[in-house]
Each structure stands twice: as structure tokens, then as C-alpha cells.
Length: 162
Image 1 (cartoon, rainbow, N blue to C red):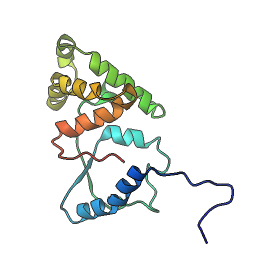
Image 2 (cartoon, rainbow, N blue to C red):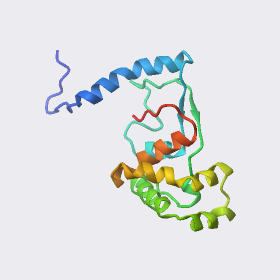
Image 3 (cartoon, one colour):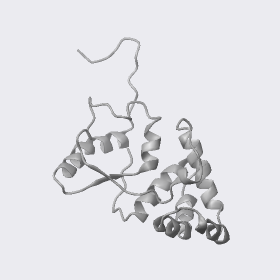
Image 4 (cartoon, rainbow, N blue to C red):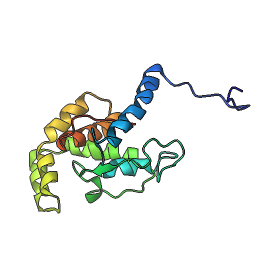
């Protein structure tokens, strides 16, 4: 028995992805042993709403079932400024990133009266680092650049994106 389904063609997985996927059980084991820690944040959960089988999460084949995932704050919480319909999260996130990239110091100072945390205000003042990250990617990857920046400002040593 080959496990093939008539009329279905198995999607080819690139070699580099296959090698990374094979490392996931070891990474999850390290989390279970308390040697490393997983973190997530609001924007990643927003993205998960649109990923089939990702939210609220399927137990079957879910390596992360029962694994502790701690919470960190968004570098800047998008939903404080822009509403979301949770169906076009990527396009909305790209627009948000473009808006962040367009802010100058005068614009940042005007935000001081709005209900942002000290952490967020610090990140508004540190937008040059976000700009630097975004220069290295196409605009369609701005959401991933934002995730990377959020990991950095939260002091993460590594960033794993599935």
C-alpha cells in the first residue's frame, strides 16, 4: 500500500523545507524538556485565523499539542490603530507596515498622546531598525519582517516561523 489517493497528487515539498520540518520534533522535545521556550504574540494568532487547520488547532498530527507557548507583546499593536476583519490579515498587515515605514519623528511624537504602552512608544522611536529589516525584503514579506522585529524587541535569541 502506497498511501496514495486516486485522483490526488501529493504536493512536492522542497528539500530545504523537508529538512527543516524533520527538525521540528527535536525542537518540540527541547521545549518539553525546558531547554528552550516558545513564544507567540497577537499578530501571529491573527494570521492563524486564515490558515487551514491552524486555529483553533487540530490535535491530529499537531506537534505543539500540550506544549507551553508563552506570550510576548506586539512590537506595536496594529489593532490599536487599525481595525481588522481577520479575512485579509496579510494585506492589512502590509498596509500597516507601509504606514509604519512612512512615519517620521514628528509623526511619532504626535502618537505620544494615544494609549500606547511605554514598550510600544520605544518601538515607534526605534522604527529605523524595522526600516532596515524591510529594506532586505519585498513588500509582500513585510509581515514576516514585522514578526522578526517583534522577536528582536522582545529579546528573542532565535526566530522560528512555521
